[in-house]
Image 1: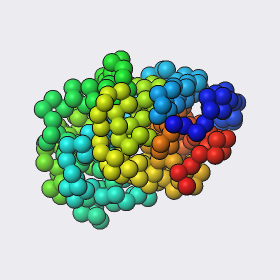
Image 2 (image 1 turned 180 degrees about the vertical axis):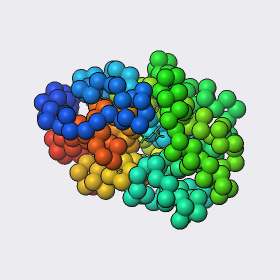
Image 3 (image 1 turned 45 degrees about the vertical axis):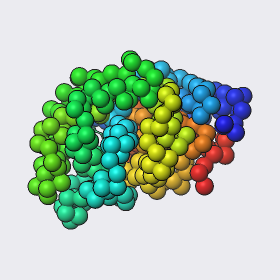
Length: 310
Ligand code: GLN
């Protein structure tokens, strides 16, 4: 049960566009992936999915956008539903304090990425997941469609191509991991599956629904089963809190106080354990790769409602 009344949530949602209006024009859509650069930067959407099954939407909440690194939570969830603690021998659980695509940290830490939510860590998790699935792309897509309860969730070929053609940093990271013996599969197979995951298109409403399992102890939002165990759901939330917004995770904990995961498509998902999942989307990013209007929207929401895990 959420402690917030419907009227209270609706009031905050209705005042949101006005509350964040002065954050536009200060950032830029991701331009290192050309397919994302041309997006209308005035877009803003927000969706909430409560553990008692209610949905709230505002602005462009039903418009599909590129989920990018938000996919790293689906990747990790799927991987740890198949395997145990051994995954964390290959990838750490510490905030990185460096950019999401940093190469230098991998060098002095001998090929063990800091956490599953930076690119190097997600590549290792992707490699591990490949060992547990027979049709990786189909299984990943159907996992996410099931969580969102929407078969319109799809893969965007143009974004995928654009990432591949401009993926020199990710290619370097994957080769580097391979040189340390921390990838079992061929580099091209890992990159292909990783770029596929980043190229899924979903709306705020899809993402809020799909992440609800993390607000309800790992229980599937639409099926009578666990997505992951309660213990694993807690761990994913902890990692989102400490590592989900890269080298801005401290500021997010300070200002928002919720487990969050962002992507360079401009989406950010936040979890209020026991209550709801929230997704905000707006393409203009700050220097750390997180949506500026999206960050402001989450700050405003917690200020107005008093929600925080602390
Ligand atoms: N696909 C992007 C990349 O690999 C994901 C990064 C992100 O969303 N932070 O660079």
